[in-house]
Image (cartoon, rainbow, N blue to C red; front, side):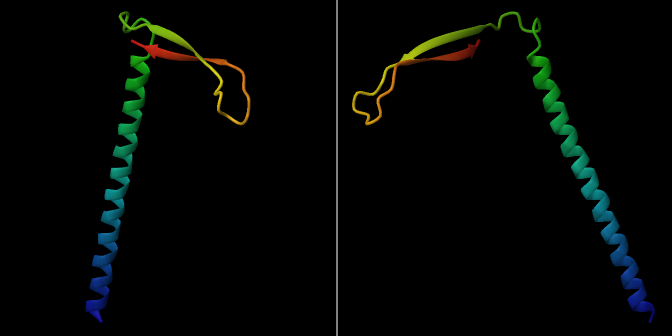
Length: 82
């Protein structure tokens, strides 16, 4: 009778340990994501990198003469951060 009870206690503590490990792993992963987010935010602050600037290239897209649906030319803007 003592052997099944001992086995049950060992299994219960093993599961609790795994649960604690999983919680720690999830907290560490969440912390890593938060740190990466704030690194990206600080890199995008104005004045931090004065050598970076925004260039916008505008392209006119002509209609396709072979298309079955006729369209008009339109313009797109492509932002480039240097």
